[in-house]
Length: 311
Image 1: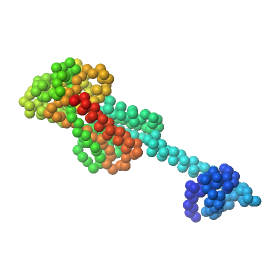
Image 2 (image 1 turned 45 degrees about the horizontal axis):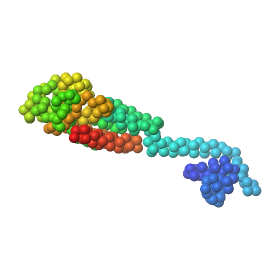
Image 3 (image 1 turned 120 degrees about the vertical axis):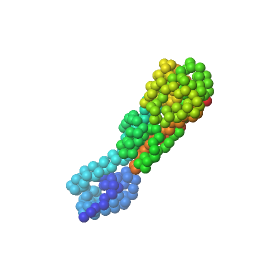
Image 4 (image 1 turned 180 degrees about the vertical axis):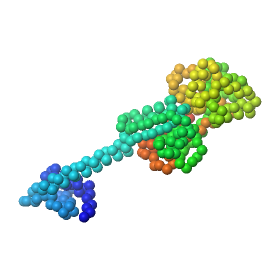
């Protein structure tokens, strides 16, 4: 025989057992006495067992009732634990978040954002790894990570992406004469030693093309995998560079008022596109959706701050 017992039946029975009377259980549960009595009788009928002996208006639990109470307690406790866990998840107090980001965002931008996101959420587990953009693309496509932040990949059905076209900026020593200019052009940097990324990176291709089209000498002194070490070379006076906005934005935070580099607008515009990546065939968790919303807001704030710094 298949029984379909409800949680309401189980919780009503438990309260009757705890209080020792139908009337007290009804008051505790906020129901009428006849409703509680009927539910207990229905439960007995479904079980095919007498749970109480009724004598002169008093209820005496049977041995079967005491055994059944233990089962009810286990079931209801498990349900209550599950409800509390779901409440914590919906309130972003529990769960797991796995984020992969490219090198430019790994030193300051993503760690600062994740720190704010995790504050006050002690039971929330998080993972942040730094990988190259092509590796991040595969990690997201294979659903190994919840969120990726990388240079913009070619579209593919296994990835959902939000793209941001960010302009590159010119980084100079603070005491460089060009630091007093509103913007810097290839004519200003004609023949000056420069740090750039590897030859097939889009920013390197665009930068060299800008010099070539302006008829100016492009003097590549240092080739880098990421722009971050280039900040030290520029500060030492070894070179200048046209770098991505995220690296420049991170430098503003690292400097903390002790700015030893100048950040200036570069023309013609050099583009560096970044994307927020999520698995295309997976449903996002509540935690991932909340973090993505914060990440989108952080990108917007960065663009606003950098716009003010360059104006």
